[in-house]
Length: 313
Ligand code: PBG
Image (cartoon, rainbow, N blue to C red; front, side, top):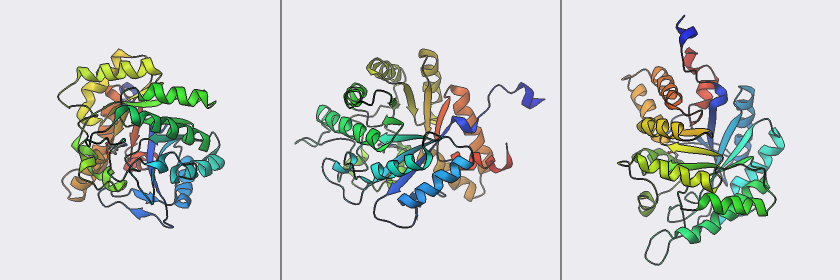
């Protein structure tokens, strides 16, 4: 009877699995701070996506980790950059059966670890970075991505990407914008996952949002929608349920939320100590994110959920 009257159900079709692919390796490398998550080789990524598809997971997101990083993150837009090569193979493998989302940013590709080009004062140059994002979007769509997801929080990024995609003939590629992304302490394990080591790249308060500001999220979301965003995202998720909820009431397009690396790692670490029941808390958090209003959830728990959520569903 409780099932009958429950008003929120998480479904495997709500979930997007974030996956990492690293250039120059031939076996997966575990990520210490994200137990159960790995840096894939292109081959192991292909196997993983095949297995996820069998389990009913219909959407994945690819992050690339290049062998060589440079000041402008050039591998983010190279036709033979690791993410593009992986997308090409995946698209050949899955066709349109799995939605291939490409995370669109350059912090995994820059040697300083910032999400953009650095000017002579050490600040991220917003407008110079837009051209880079535009080129990366076209490279990702050319490689077979079904959707691009700009995560760099540069002003004007959605408009720049939309224009670039359209003029390259990719008018059918939607944009899932990381619209309201906070300068959170919860991205730590992700930075290990993508080998962002530099101290400078760690402070992103210049372009990510201040967690003291809730209303600002609506300004960011409205700006992205005006520029052509098809889906808007709030990130992180559990610490920002109020933001998810107010975005959900403010817009009529799909709302996504990213249950980020630190949120996942906290569950795993406490569960490993026997301090919480990890399966229960994981399902509780995913349900809370959906209840708050996110119909799409990016989560490292996707495979676990698809496999039955520890027997809880
Ligand atoms: C930036 C990006 C970040 C994540 C995804 N894309 C965060 C950052 O600013 O370091 C975080 C995802 C996570 O923590 O799981 N390109």
